[in-house]
Image (cartoon, rainbow, N blue to C red; front, top):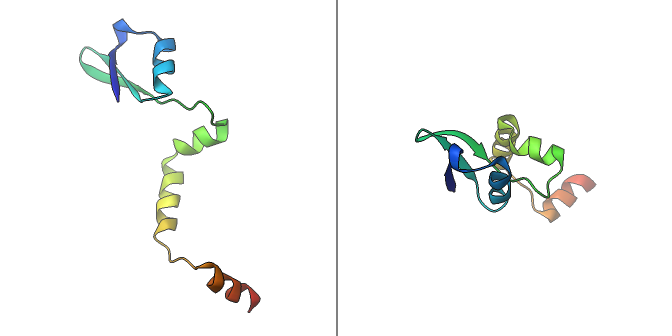
Length: 78
């Protein structure tokens, strides 16, 4: 994670740097913003990546039991 002072950077520089590492923008020694690069993602991917509800859904789903392929096929074929 890169840290920069707001007086010593530009938005363009932060966006460029954020494509490879998160950038924390500081003002008076305190963090005021976080810039995260999303180049290569579409708008929906960027929105989901920032959604607490989405990540809770993923976390809850990962706790559920899973089936291997043969068990799934047996279940589908009755």
